[in-house]
Picture 1 (cartoon, rainbow, N blue to C red):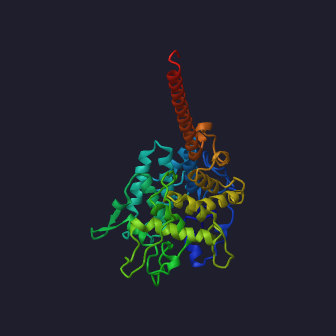
Picture 2: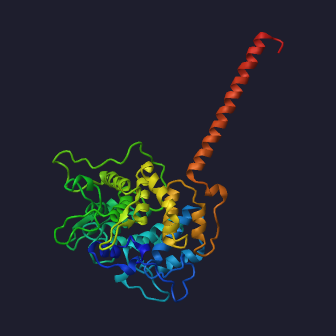
Length: 418
């Protein structure tokens, strides 16, 4: 069973949707009874989220211009199996088991190593593993050999984008040799289209109902799949900006396609997430069968990242502010590595000052090789402001020079002896 830090994992999502009691999964992980591996971020038991939290930490710190310790990167690369996949966690000396390698861990590990740089062989092996374990319908399962889900498929598409591999070109051949559906087709398999009620269109369901085949909107699935639908990956670093809110799916007539076209998928889920954030007081809600609804920090963070990636930072602003206000609770005062790293990724994407969060995350792992200088740590918005300030200084200087020249010319006309 997965910890709360791995809310993106398909196993936990399945338990929540099926109404299975997931008490152990939602409880804080106990401190490990054995010493933690050298180079690992976080102090809790890494059994279920070691690769996940390490990958998020390395990605976030690299984006914050912090050079992680060699031991931190070596721990992550050392978790990779010979076939290219990553498990959630593998104890030192333990053999790999192909059945327990998972697409979530593999996808975030690929993105982390791309962000760190210098590990192309490991990245290529990871992408090869994703291609080998894609389902014929274009989706990815959490573990090989089971039906795919929206969360895992979205994370895999993120990894393909990070590795500069076109998801449209990734399609596993079927047993008959025919080419299967591609990664975008797999993602579309979980998105609600024009046949759904208007307020659900654009959302993603975790998986179709096994009996009826119908999809039920799921906020976490929608938030994690949305970054992929928007063409993004971790870390989110884009300057694209739209002047309008996300465009809801157009379903005015009966000619709308059965599935949401890829070109419209990002906007459609962005519109759904925007409406859900507004209705929820600028955060998404986790609804667990048998429990009262509660704020879903992870889903809110991924929704903000997706909206920023798709060019709608204004629609993410209040959610980012809410996350920052709840940061101490979510990150357990900066002691939860996965939560701290995710909040740092959101802060960077939203052009907020990441210094405090970067410091908290750095303290949870080995001493970095190098940290950002004050100029490197400046947020993109402050750098933009500094650049605009320099431009205005140049313009003012030119105007003063032109004005002085005109004044001198007039004076010379009045007094030729000047």
